[in-house]
Amino acid sequence: MPATLSAEATTRWHALAEQVLAGEPLTADQARDVLACPDGELLALLDAAYQVRHYYFGNKVQLYFLMNAKSGLCPEDCGYCSQSKVSEAEIPKYNILQRDKLLDGARVAAERNARTYCLVISARGPNEREMQAVETIVPEIKEKYGLHICACLGLLTDEQAARLKACGVDRVNHNLNTSGEHYEKICSTHTYKDRLDTLAAVRSAGMELCSGGIIGMGEQPEDVVSMALELREQGVHSIPINFLNPIDGTPLEGAAISGQHALTPQYCLKVLAMFRLVNPDRELRIAGGREIHLRSLQPLGLYPANSLFVGDYLTTEGQAPEADYAMIRDLGFEVTVEH
Image 1 (cartoon, rainbow, N blue to C red):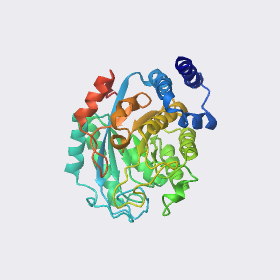
Image 2 (cartoon, rainbow, N blue to C red):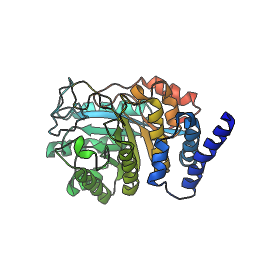
Image 3 (tube, helix red, strand yellow):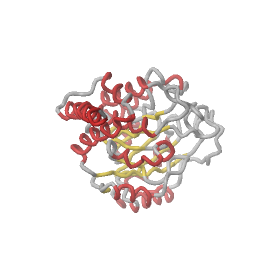
Image 4 (cartoon, rainbow, N blue to C red):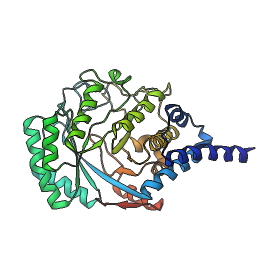
C-alpha cells in the first residue's frame, strides 16, 4: 500500500509540472492543492517543482547581497517591519549612507559572488537627497564591479522610476507582501493599490520588476495563492519569498498562519513549490526567515527556488556565507554570476 500511494503521489504532482511545462498555467484551485499537499507527499511535490526549476534554470543558483542603505526613521506602519514608526524594536537608525559605505558594500557583494547588489532604504518613498545619492552611486558601482543593481526605495512616481532607469538601475524591488484582501490587516498608511501603482511605474520606465511577499502574517492559504497569481499577472521577473521573522517590538511579533502557532519547514517548502509552479520561468528567491523556519530543511528549498540572499538581511543576521556555499555545493548546484 505505501508504494502504491507513493506512485499515485508522484503521478499527481508530476502531472502539474507537465501541465506547466506544456504552457497551461496553474489554476487557483490547483495552487491551493499544492499548499494542502500531505506531508507524506512532500518529496514527490518537490521533485515535480524541481522538474520545472531545472527546465528553466538548470542547477544554477543566483546570489543577492542586501545593503540596508537607510535604517529606521520610516513613517509607515507596516506591522511586520522593525523599521516602521510603530515598531519598538531596538535597531540601528541612520539616514542614507555615504558613498564610501555604499561602495564598500558593492565590493563585498562582488567578493561573495553575488550577481545583484540590492540598495534598500526605509521610507514611504525616496526624497530628493536620496534619489540623488542613488543616481550618483549606481553608475560608479556598475563601472567598478559590474553588478546588477536592484533598488528598493518605497513608493515611486513615474518621474522617479524614469530617473532610476536613466542612472542604470536594472530592477526595482517593491513587494506586494500579501494579498489585496489581507493587506489592510498589516498596514494602514498606504494601500495595496499604491504598491501596484509603483510596479506599474517601474514597468513603464523599462526596468525589471522584483516583487514577492512575507509568509506567516496571519494570512490564509487563499491569500498566499492570491499573491502568487497576482505576481504572475504583473509579469514580475524576480520573486523573493520571506518567512516572517517575529522581531521583538513589532506588532506582528508572534503572528501565526492558518491557525498554527508557527510556520513549519514542510509548509514553507510547499509555499516555495507553489510559487515555482505558478510562476515557472521566474526567478524565485528564498529570502528573510529561511534560517528560522526551514531550519535543517533549507537545502530542499533550492529544489523549487533558484536564488538566495547571501549574508545578512535588513536588521537581522543571516547564516554565514560559507554555510550557503557549502549547501549549494553539497546539492551539486553551482553559483552563477552571469549577467
